Length: 200
Image (cartoon, rainbow, N blue to C red; front, side, top):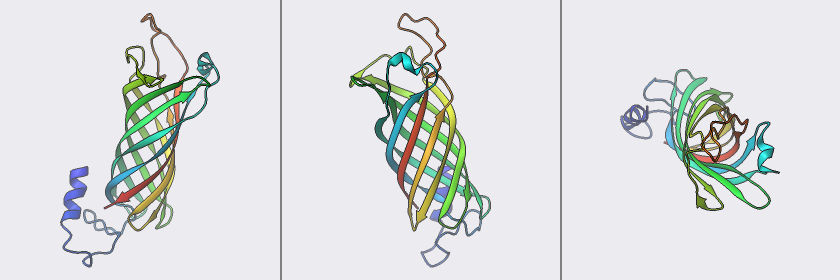
């Protein structure tokens, strides 16, 4: 999808040949179509009926960033795929648990106006590292695959995009105890993101 979008935009002969929001692949005058980079701040936390086993947990503030591509089917509807590096986790009064993921959301984008859009769709995530108090810990007890839903709003001004999104994790992030035995704990990821993007 990234290559497909890039080839289409590379075929433009100059800035005056088509309107700014013209999609070279579909021929549509479509807001937001294209590709770009994005990044911002994440407010991550744990949710679920068993999260209290870690004590009183609070939100953990960190960052996320990556690339996106978007292809318009109509002037109202498009699909957006992203690849993001995202730091999640939670804090206690005396410690921080941090989990680094690769997030791959696939979002339906509904253009409410020329400059405002609603994003909604599934997301899969792959845990690549875990830390406790800045020390690497073994990934073996954790469920390194997560899936869930993502939803948010995005505003666009020229090439710049400013948005907010909520990521709801549906997979328990731990499936083994310290002894290596399977467990069933209702503890999942919950993340609010605020980001700035640049589209091309």
